[in-house]
Structures are given as structure tokens and as C-alpha cells.
Length: 377
Image 1 (cartoon, rainbow, N blue to C red):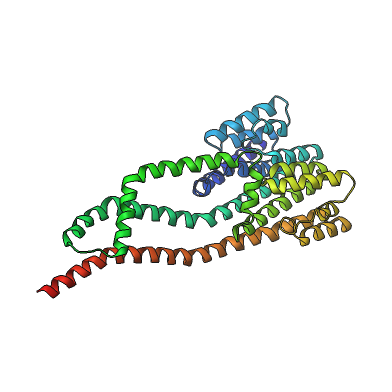
Image 2 (cartoon, helix red, strand yellow; image 1 turned 90 degrees about the vertical axis):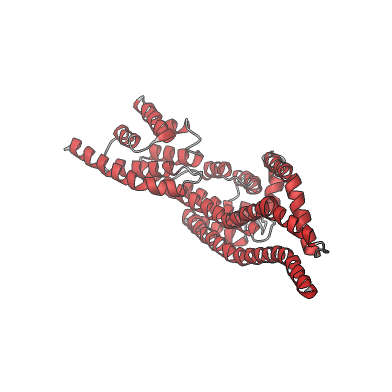
């Protein structure tokens, strides 16, 4: 009976994985979707009373590529007597501190299935937030690339042929045409060098903002940009509340939860402030009091520490943090949708103006030549 159940579950898992492969390919733009499926499927198998070694054997058959190798290594370590959290800890590229910490708590408390489900939910929310932020920048990026393509097409193929025609008119050209021809000539002459310089500058800036002393200033600057800054603040607040709430729900102490949350955030402004909050919590203040004592309206709105303080007094801190996470996740979703609605008409106007200037610059001399030719006949 046990072998039959094992085969049935394996078949169901295989079918489920095949269904996810297409979806996985469609949205996996730099995200490790496999680690979410790993936690979800492992929780399902363990709930079905399949031991962890057999569960990992089933999981190993479901994945491909690098992650399949990772699961096989985790399986071997578990079979050799290591805990699941210790085995996962050897693969930090796929399993971060939150993931490993929750699995560790689940093993110690005997609630591994519940903790794996929380891991999957937290990782899914993190993924959704990141996708929302990336989606907001996708449309402007596509338009920018199209404009660069248009500039290259005009400069290298269309305008050089028109220059010959314009020179044959033997008449003064409008200023718009002169400017367009000058820009086209510049791009044609210095375009490759300009492209190399832009790429070099991009790489240098990217290297620069990764430096420990510069990164906080760069991230602080981004958070002061209208609209984008609001998006980044709400995104970091959503991540802070979701991670901390999930850890506390799983039974992790407030000190360990703050440590893991700080390590999991990528924004140095929030990390530095939370380090100060943690120091005050260690000194004896409650979490709400610690945040209130370092109150910065732009970083932690009053609404956040008030709800945290209420949660601490009523014993519902975890629920309040999850509520705050859901609130800010909805705010991020709303901002990204509105951002697309605001950017689209602005970009259309800019493109319209550019096309109109290019059209006028090309058509005006032709029209003047035809008018001059008609008058002389």
C-alpha cells in the first residue's frame, strides 16, 4: 500500500511539475522559481506522511539543470544524517537566510510542513513585489530602445541618402533640417565611440554604487525621486513587514527575526535604520517604541509603528505585520499600474514631438523646392 501511494504521489508531482514548466519559462526573468516549488511540493509530500528522504528523491526527479543537482546534494546530505536546514545552508544562491531560518525553526518545533508553506508564501510575495517593480520600468525601457533604433536607422540609412537630394536643391535649408543633419552626422561619425562610452559609464556607475560607502547615498537619492522614491519606500516597507511577520509567526525570537530581516533587505537606508532599531530593542524598548524613537516620516510612516505598538500590546504583532505587508504590497501594485498609465501618454507625446520634428525637417526642404520649381515654371 505504501509503495502504491508513493507511485501515485510521484505521478501527481510529475504532472504538476510539467504544468509549471511552461509557466516557469514564461516568468522566470532572473528569479529562482524552483525554490518556491521546492518548498510547496516538499510540504505536500511531508503532509502525505512520506519521509523526508523519499520526498527529496521524488523532488529530485522533478527538476532540471542546476537546481536538480542542488536537490540531489541536499538529498545526499539528509541521507547522511544532516538536518534539512544544514543541507540547504550549503546552497546560499538558492536558499537565503529567511528560507533556511524558517526550515530550521520548523525542524526544531516539529512544524516543518507549516514553516515550508510560510517559506513558499513569503518567497512568492517577494517575487511578486520584484516583478511589479520591474514591470514598471519595462515600458519606458522598450520605448528608449526603440528611439535609439530610430536614431540609428535615420543616421545610417535614411538621412545620408537625403543629404545628396538636399544638396542638389542648391537652396538654403530650414534650421530644423540643418539641426537634424548635424545630429545625424555626429551620430554617424561618433556613434560607435559614443555607444562604447555610454556602456563604459554604465558599468562604472554600476560598480560605483555597489561600493559600501556610496550605496547608501545612491539609494537615498533614488528614494527622493518623485514617484520612483514612493515606490521604493513602499516596496521596502512591504518586504520588511512580510519577512519580520513571517519569522515571528514561525516562532523565531524578535532579535533573530530582526537580524534575518536586516540581512534580507537590499536597501542600505532601511538596513542602517533597522540596525539602530535592533540596538534599542536589545536595550529593552519594544519594537514600536524603538521605531518611534527613530521616527522618520519618509522611512517609517507613523501608521507603521502605531500599528506595531498596538500589535505588541494586544499580542497580535505578527498579524499586524502581515496586514501591513499586504497593505503596502497593494500600494506597490497600485503605483506600478498608475506609473504605466502616467508614463504612456508622456512618452507618446515625446515620441510624437520627435517624429513631428523629423518629419518637418525632411519634408520642409522638399516642399520649398517644389514650390520654388512651380513658381519658376
